[in-house]
Image 1 (cartoon, rainbow, N blue to C red):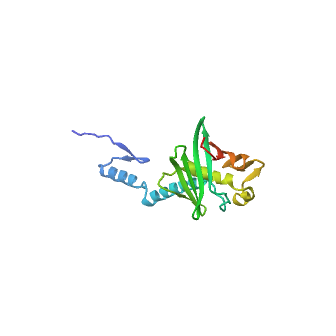
Image 2: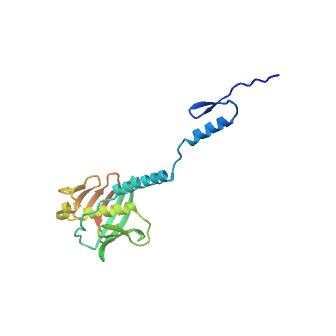
Image 3: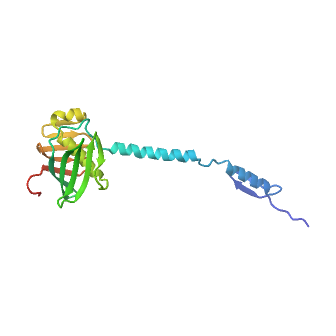
Length: 205
C-alpha cells in the first residue's frame, strides 16, 4: 500500500520555497533569505545620535536671545520694578543691575525678597551666579532689558538690525519697546509675555 503526500509550498521572503526531498533545502533557503537583510550597524546608530544632537544644538542656537556686539554704557547701579503681564495675570519683581568685577550682575527677586534669578554678563556671555536653577525666561528678559536700556547713539553699532522711531524701538522677530520715559517702558515679546518696566524709588508697589 502506497501513501501519497502532496507537495507543500512554504512562503519565504518574496518568493515560494518548495519542499522536494526533505526540509533541509527549505531551511537553508529561508535562513539565507533572512540573513540577506542588513541589520543596523554601530556606525549607523552613532550617526543617528549625532544627527539628533546637531538638530537640538541648532534649535538651541536659533532660540538664543541676541546680545549686543559690545556692552553698552549703562548708568549703574539700577533698580527696576518689573511687572509681568500674561493671560490676565500679573507678577511683580524687583531687578537690581550692578557692575561686579569685569561683568554686570543681574539679580531679580519677588516682592518678599526671595531670589528668582541671578546672572552675570561677562565678555558677551551669560554665566550662572549662585545656586539658583536655570531660568531661561529670566535670561531672555535680561537680554531684552539690555536692548531697551542701550543708549540711542549706541543702538545701531550694537544691534545692526534694530531701529528706533520716536518713542518706539524694535529688534525684528525679538522685541518691541514703547517708551513713556527714558527709563519707563513697555517691553513686548513676539509670543508674550508683556513687561512693564519702571525705575524703583521709595517703597515697592
